[in-house]
View 1 (cartoon, helix red, strand yellow):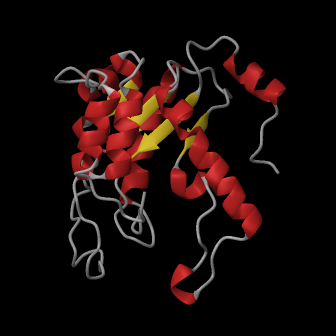
View 2 (cartoon, helix red, strand yellow):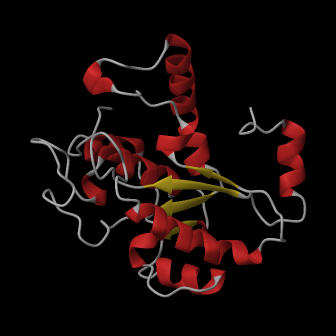
Length: 204
């Protein structure tokens, strides 16, 4: 219950802050059973958040959407332990809200467009047939990136694959928008055609 905020809590959290204190992570899973088995991506996200939150008042509440921790996952699918009916309903409800979360004009999307150092089939003990496609070739990454390109200013869709030594919000945004930041919005027909060539870790 502590993870849930009321509408009043959300309104209070946005007072005195430009935009919305909500971040959404877009990234490729590193393993079919766990998106970040070694915590390498967690460290990169933490580094980015530390820089971004320098501009927030001390004690300011903010939210991070990370699919693995924010949506119910199957506890142990290899052994037949899957989501309950209630959890599955909540999971589907959450999926139905992703477009708003990533495309909203004032949320910030963090895009991990590169693999962490040392990522390989051997180092991560990947099973046969595991999806090792790069960020641009992943179906969900392509979708989230397209959503983030609809209405945002470029500084609200950050390519963390370009992050190097950013120690402040301004420095991070400058690093992570090199080359123009977000791509232009696509026509629905163009997006649908592009999506056909992408791969999905656990299905569409």
